[in-house]
Length: 377
Ligand SMILES: Nc1ncnc2c1ncn2[C@@H]1O[C@H](COP(=O)(O)OP(=O)(O)OP(=O)(O)O)[C@@H](O)[C@H]1O
Image 1 (cartoon, rainbow, N blue to C red):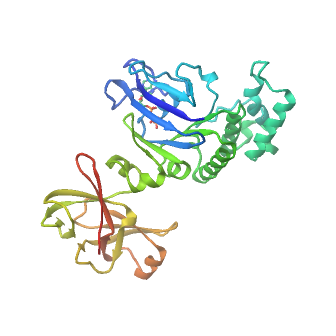
Image 2 (image 1 turned 30 degrees about the horizontal axis):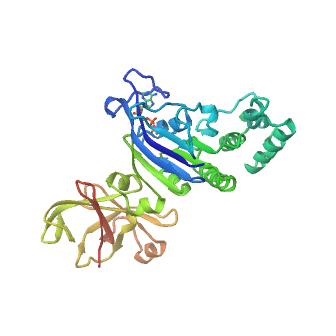
Image 3 (image 1 turned 30 degrees about the vertical axis):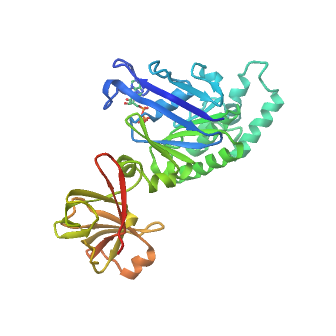
């Protein structure tokens, strides 16, 4: 089922009490959402990513029907061809999963998953045999069949969240909405649950929208990610496109580690203390941004890049080695990620003097037009 939002805005009155007991800090006049336009294709898995207070949950709750959008502008929500703007939450055919597993503690796993089906009006309710079959099939999918008779308290956090997922899917929703579904779990379990969700999503073909403030989670799990800030969608794109062609500085900085280089450009050379870099930019003050993988470390400078640094920390854990380097000309240390082979070849140690050689840099002008330049060194 596709989802289309047109001009969905939300303004909370100053006296309004938040569902989380929050006020409306940082947003003039309690504006939680600027008018948002968004199209999600049938069967798509979209992540809503943004810092705290950027409006992710508000947007999700409006789509769910748990919160109503402003009347001015008169926004609309379509599920497929159906206008659901004024349709009650229980008639929107939505499944929910929230961070805090709202499982019924006095019910077994089986009964929790079956609950939504057993409370359907009689004419819509499947037979008890059918309910049993459907619940077992769902528990099989989330590999919890042998726990059907247990109570939530007898399960781990990750298992409880899998029950929540099965329960949300029991009513065969067209749309699955997840609010920080894995937020309360440790890193390894989160990773596992992401795979679950992706698999179930692909297998069952529903449309999913999930809220997260975890960049890695959003980029790994989603077909597309909507990056939000201050109640606006700054950019919505595939993870690859977001990372490679960010629409503005906020998106660039929010999606990963960033190194800063600020200096004065004169005659095609940027100077910052004892560091210099050849750049194709007009004279004046400039700030360049670099991702850690765009910084090469070498034993000698090049004619284009003379950026002396000292290694201050080395973290060889993971697919790449993370090297922190510092220098007098840097306000904050830089992070460089290099291959293990290069790490061994350079025989890096703490305190070692090296040269940073930018492969690429990015610049966002005041009008936020992104620019990316490759260094032809
Ligand atoms: N019921 C409410 N009444 C008043 N203000 C609210 C209410 N719900 C949210 N807000 C405000 O609206 C803004 C957006 O909040 P929202 O919860 O949507 O952000 P979020 O991106 O989901 O944040 P988080 O990651 O912290 O959950 C915030 O400024 C928040 O304080």
